[in-house]
Amino acid sequence: MPGAIHAEGLVKTFGDVRALDGVDLDVPQGTVLGLLGPNGAGKTTTVRILTTLLRPDSGRAEVAGIDVLTHPNDVRRSIGLSGQFAAVDEYLTGRENLRMVARLYQLSGAHARRRADELLERFNLADAADRIAKNYSGGMRRRLDLAAALVVSPPVMFMDEPTTGLDPRNRQALWEVMKELVAGGTTLMLTTQYLEEADHLADSIAVVDHGRIIARGTSDELKRRSGGDVVEVIARDATRLDETRAILNRLGDGEAGVDTHTRRLTVPAVGGAKLLVEVIRELDAVGIEIDDIGLRRPTLDDVFISLTGRTAEDPGLTGDGDAADEGDTTDGSDGGKGPDGAANTTSRGKGTAPAAGGGAIAPAAARTSRNTEEGPR
Image (tube, rainbow, N blue to C red; front, side, top):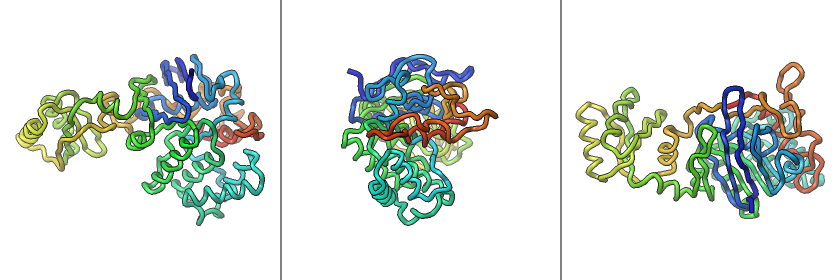
């Protein structure tokens, strides 16, 4: 029996770029799938198709047992979505934004006010509740957007890099909210570049690269695929990363991964402490200074690098993105462009579907319309 989120053979191209190349997914009800991949791997395109904001070129998908292509309005009744960018009304206060979304879900006035106050407290926005969102910081807008996505608890929730831009305290708070949602029966698809986040939250993980699922399993299963110990080196001089990598490739048991931002290199190790000594000796012989070196068990970061050859933050090549300017939404709209080709930030989703629980408008679609106009990534 298919899961709460099920996809078979999803393909999507933007011009010459093949953003998705046959994606298959199945997420059992009440679980969390972490969808990982470098920038441009196909994560956001997958989410947009599953949430009815983009039509695939081929393949099929069901969400909450409903066909995404033939019954998009029914899908919208059953989902919540927090897109990659904050989609709040900048000219309303934080409190007014949340009350508006609650009323779109057809909560009563009293219930809408109560729910807005609860979410403002939960996301540490109570002190700024009556300031217009235009004056919020980027992190505050992100928290407000996430709060709006959680006004109700839909059967299926999609979160596209939800904690990007959040400080550690607010990231931890959102993790707790996610856990409570799933404990209540919600199925969650989470895309993230924070591998610690996937490690902490996801029941299963799918790694996507160049539009394809290249690995899937639990965090522990994926780590076991990386083998045994890992030698980790923090180089002092970023200009000598290539030399350091060549030494690790020669001495290690596989290709070394490199994170240029942190000057961190890792390579699978056979021989334990003996290999560590050899690496230190070789680096010293050519005058390469290091800030740190150690031997440790593999992490999800190591798995990711071994599978994709790059870190989660490195840019990809497939052209995955947030816009449907080369495709159509599943309800046949024009992808949100106005007659002059400018982004239309208000048209998509309005008046198209009841909310979860029987409302008149699908805020998940309406709120994310401005997230879909920037061109493929």
